[in-house]
Length: 336
Image 1 (cartoon, rainbow, N blue to C red):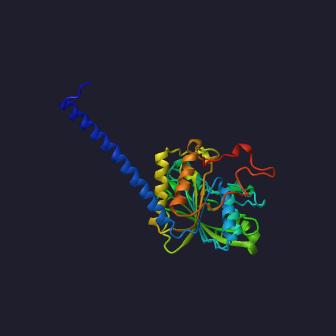
Image 2: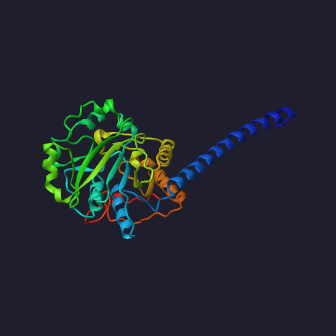
Image 3: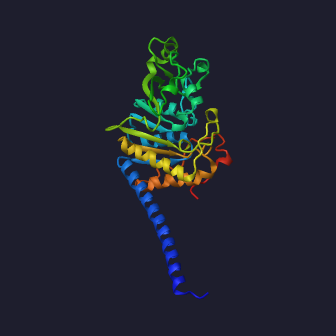
């Protein structure tokens, strides 16, 4: 093909446009990566240790490791999670096999210096009307067999539409509990409530008061001057709905997942959260499978940008740890 002066001018113009588009994209990606790096560096400036693990109860292996280094655990836990990982009126009786649904019970019992727990749930979970009604329902009919913590426990006066009129992304909800330091049994403490007194009087001499606040990222308070143990469960970012209340799903694509991590760490900075320790849990049973490797790579970026090392490589706990070991189908290497 003969390239004339006119054709050459048009070709040059097309190539220039292509280079501008490619260059702009590269610059944008560079800025995004640089921005995330700076956000992480700021958020982790007071952080001593970070652990990227697979199952959420492995946060207990991490906390055990922290104590083994003669370090003190903070008085505050902030847990970004679709699930509360707490049970009401249920003792945790098997050491080293504390489940993913009750690891915080074990944590509170093992480390009684903890005074406050903040459960940060996804905004969509907090604003789904069916779930808002469930938040308000007391658990008295199921309580004596043990029940997963999910909002109101014993406060009978709470209207069924309370969380519809007062969604958790507009106002947080705080409750007082007593934890049995011997076995992690947790019950709500309400003055002049006969059921609360009946339950908590069982372990008055072994009890520890703790405040639990359920909220969203918007209703987290300012934590200026307070050290925290920060836990981030990947199912907060994207959740397949497996074994989740009413099969609640929140499936995001890769761009949206990355944006959620941006928002979490921007919030950490804007609300003066100073995480001394950070536990990052993949929760592969709940995170959509197609995002396992992608999310784990984000974990590794967070560790790299914080200028830390991954604290642990082996764990005694897990989603399906039994006396015979982990179920073979759970042996997945997400680092490859």
